[in-house]
Image (cartoon, rainbow over all chains, first blue to last red; front, side, top):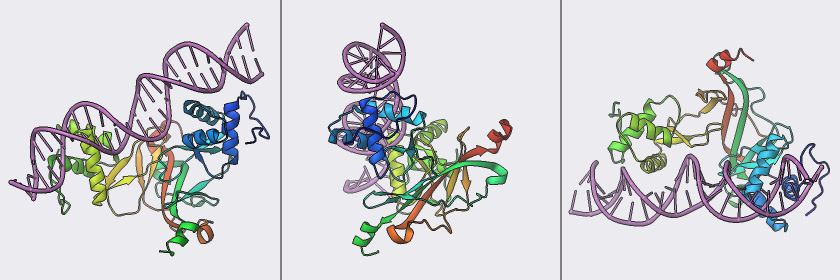
Length: 141
Length: 141
DNA sequence: ATTACTGCAAAGCATTTGCAGACTG
DNA sequence: CAGTCTGCAAATGCTTTGCAGTAAT
């Protein structure tokens, strides 16, 4: 595992554990849980205590370096590097694979509560379905 | 608390605890957690064990009588009577009040992953913002 | 050297489960 | 009366926290 990141967040003390966590998140194709990171670190020969992982994630979230990714049906909390982009995810109900969705259905949507009862400031969308592999393997049921 | 419901789900054994849970859900204006139901039952002088509440909810969900309501930022699982309607909720970030949204942004939305990589079968939308009361009290900031 | 970070183990919280007694149909 | 439901208490799984040692600047 390559430990050096292109740029290290300002004002953040650089430790082996933090480098490992951020590198894993950087290399990941989908959001990761604390347990994922624990396993990933171990697999890379850089074991980190689970509690430390939780603390790093909490700290990095506060620093704006990582964000929670709300993914449908995930029992654990998932994290990813903060891209400052508006993102949503689709989850395969079979294999749990997570896929990014780039466009957003809320872009031009006005909830029928908007003007009167509620001022919308944010949202979170979770999409379920079948990924190409799993859909194929069940004959486009 | 009125315990009698208009109609009792078919093939479901009627017990004091189940009647209490369904009545509470029926009377609720927003989805309830197991803890809410526990407190509500106690407040009505009809204490139910928490584990029983969980079992009732699980059972009633399997029967299609209740459904989980996915609400943004809720740490607990929330349940409501199954209206068989497509619903989403908005949550006030100040007071945590939950408000139903009747229209759905996904109605005419095609995720840009749809045709190629993913077949969408369902979704879940969580909306954040300020309810009328809380928005007013902070001067439409 | 100072202050923050880490690991360990124990605690915390929501939810689940085993078991024996209670109740419904 | 048989089979299911309930309560209790203990167990589980994820996440958090206290504390003492360790490491980064």
